[in-house]
Length: 186
Image 1 (cartoon, rainbow, N blue to C red):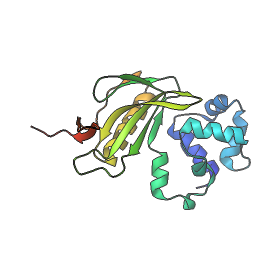
Image 2: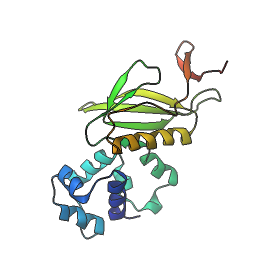
Image 3: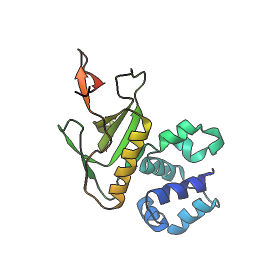
Image 4: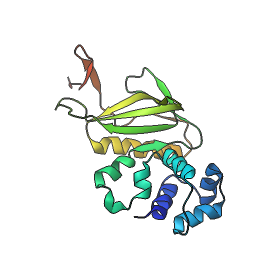
């Protein structure tokens, strides 16, 4: 997949018209049309804005699909971003309500059998030091976290201002280092 096709796919997945994307990037609709048709490319500054806006790497945007593994392409799709403000999401332990501008999932490396495999974090602001994030929930498998992200994207698209986690698994913190473990059903 080439740059223009990826841009169009990302724009459509995020329910943006060419005009709306152009407005966010402070360019003309015609510029976005040229980029998507492959007759032009954005400046480096606009590429960086696109990368941040869609929460994807520049590698994903610029390299042909054949150079990216399916796993890397899937990782670039493991996020949701609110373009019309924020969406409030209560954390798994009900200790925080995070006004998220985006959410991201990450695989937990070397998780044991009785530990969650994925984590979902909510980003509430981005500063010069980086993203400020809060753990929203833990997940046993990739399907559950992807279902959650899809549901969050759906809530954002329908204009919801809050969202309740639906697929997160219950965990308890165990041990000296408060390692998250799957809660045992009683």
